[in-house]
Image 1 (cartoon, one colour):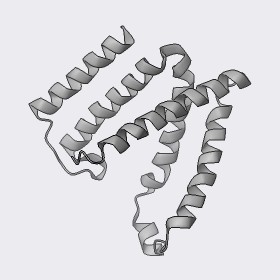
Image 2 (cartoon, one colour):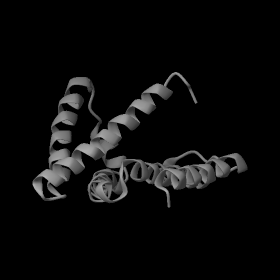
Image 3 (cartoon, rainbow, N blue to C red):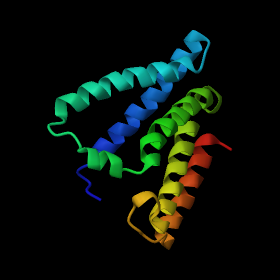
Image 4 (cartoon, helix red, strand yellow):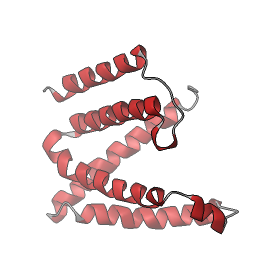
Length: 148
């Protein structure tokens, strides 16, 4: 891992936690936890379209589009909606620390599984004892933060 990029990853964590908080706040203000997800996706679509059109000099060919697995077209958007809506629903009940800790723990554990088995196109990296110990420590850290 390049430690040069680590601060940017931390910044992304800050951005993600802020997104969760502001979406939960909007849901509370509107009295509806589903509208913020739609607003988030609509604003995200506009921002992503502008970013893509601004920074994409060459578009994929028809062959490239056809070669992508069907689930790759659907999973990101569907999973994003589930994730976003779940965060809006759970944030007020769990609190920011517990919610984000549990989300990151889930990401870490599933990432180790993805690497170990080489699922969804990832290169195979064994679930070694240090990697498994890291997962256990992450769970312990979440338990301390969440006070379960």
